[in-house]
Image (cartoon, rainbow, N blue to C red; front, side, top):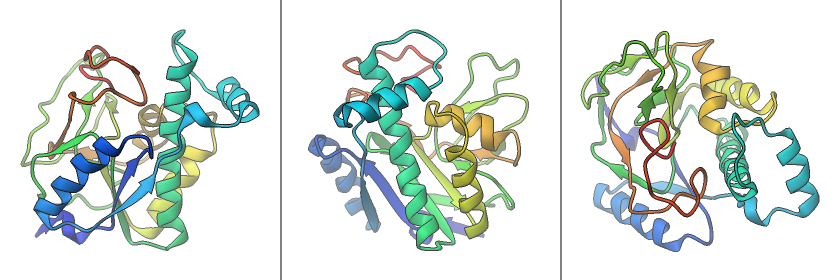
Length: 222
């Protein structure tokens, strides 16, 4: 059975201070005649000072990095939580979440995996993986014995599953959103990936390497 992005409840995350990214995404959506709801991103840089201190102390990071980058990760994570919470509150049967610097390469989907945790529409296999499968545009690949990183675009199917994902990732200490997904979702439910989107590196990241477009981490900025 073939589906397209039109069969899903689509949202995209965008910071108020990034109108150029909003324009870029909405031009793509318009070309596809795709109805997508904007979720205003939570800007970690402008959180109240007490909230910044609390969240930075809570955040788990694997290396020393600048506070602005920590706050970027925090804002990104909170923004994904916000999008998931909308789906939970509205009792949606499915959700497709885009970040706002994504190139959409295709929007048709076949043989949608059943009983999945997360269906990734783009991202990258962990550089430490012993076996590195090819991320292709036509076939779903199950994530096994490695981590799949990135949260640029993904689908979650089923009301109960969306609620389960939301509860899983908002309960532990905060990490980067893609790491939360590897630890809390990929370990416990089958997850799959396909290549329908890629990062647009012409935009600088608001999350990881703020002020830099150099792809250095995990083959990208994610």
